[in-house]
Image 1 (cartoon, rainbow, N blue to C red):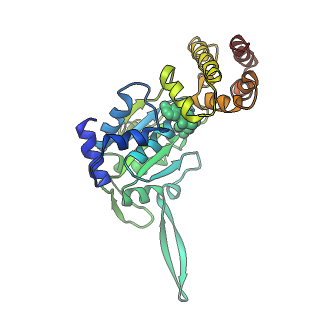
Image 2: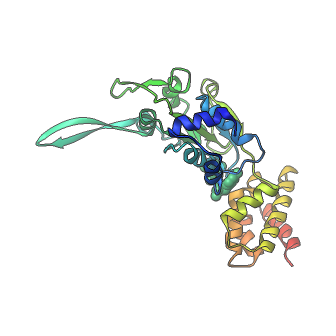
Image 3: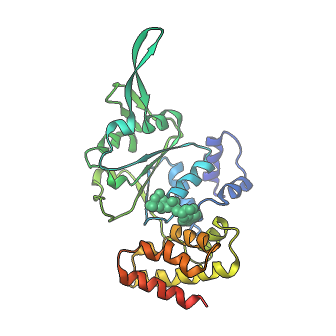
Length: 287
Ligand SMILES: Nc1ncnc2c1ncn2[C@@H]1O[C@H](COP(=O)(O)OP(=O)(O)OP(=O)(O)O)[C@@H](O)[C@H]1O
Ligand SMILES: [Mg+2]
């Protein structure tokens, strides 16, 4: 393992970190599509860079964040962005607490403040769904200052040394807006593709250990066809989503593969021609 990452891990876990631990944690966790991606993300995180994960639905962004949380032994605070996201959902809110007949106003820390104070991992999902005016409150946190002034309490909060940020986006989806340049500029960014070939097989086998080899082979063959047709523009990219392939494989343990694929993949596509194409491709692999 890269000694720089090893040192960071040892520092965070406050103990020596062994290669066996890392492999154990990775089992069932995020599988890197190439030898570099996962380690490069760990290097960037170790340098305290906020990370932006860009990838389609079901490409493993959340799983990647969960794996890093396990690897660093660092709990994860999650924020799901939407147009309704406001400063309170990020930072927390004031509440009245009654004790011994006395009422006092206390501030309940939200996910951002909790992660900052305790050195947790902050996962901001679908960051491009938030209204552009909501997120500038995080700018000072996401650059070298690593602090923010809580507007509700006027408290100046400096992030714990271990505090880290991972954000995820699905580019170009309905309801998303292009990320504000000043916000985007604070991140280092990684494209998260759908897995293919052996890495995909590993994930399928780990996700559905009870599936038999011929069924996994069929799903693997179909996935190759789906990726090709998506590359040709004949299918939506999400047709080859790893999540959908896992769903299809789980159903296929209990029913014929063609029905499983219809429910888990074809029926999710808007266009009838795309649905028919998926079913036709499946038929070529099912005897
Ligand atoms: N590279 C990968 N390694 C391990 N598991 C993966 C990988 N890619 C996808 N998966 C599996 O696919 C499923 C979906 O992954 P996940 O929820 O992380 O996707 P996502 O990119 O966060 O999707 P969304 O954008 O819809 O939230 C999970 O069961 C996950 O374990
Ligand atoms: Mg996700």
